[in-house]
Image (cartoon, rainbow, N blue to C red; front, top):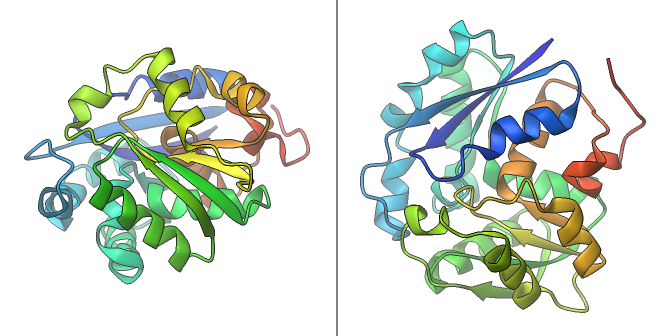
Length: 243
């Protein structure tokens, strides 16, 4: 059994995680602890506070006691708003507090894009323009070329959490560009786990979404590679490893 730990802000699309656990179809356990979000707003100042050390470390002990072998801060915007260096320090602080390997969804997107060989990516963000641009800047700092950014201008995670299949597909289509090798949907408040295979079929290219890459990143930290086609092409890159 491999136990993965996640710190998830508030309550929006956390039901993606048990769905992903089921789709993995292996001896993977997903443990999720909710963190305090303070103000639910996709504003830079609020997002910098959402990932403050005291908010993240508050949930660490529960994950440690659960037997988690790695921990991921499951909030994209709560990482990249600090910039590349600031997000690295955030992860280092989390790893020290947890006593185990740690990462965040922001870094997961960079690592996942590298995994599938996608150097040029398009972004479909639920965030306002200024926050979406900070994500694009973060990706560029990670060595990726951003071909375009589509922003939906949604201010709260709570609203994003109400989006269904139609809105998710519309966002992905609006973001896609011919020159992009993959489309990235960066909000962990967005329900995407049920739609990954269909999204990739619709666009004809890999689609990376926040909760998907977050779980993949935790698996990477524990040196696990699981073949799970229902979770998109990201989960078909390695030889079949099932128990």
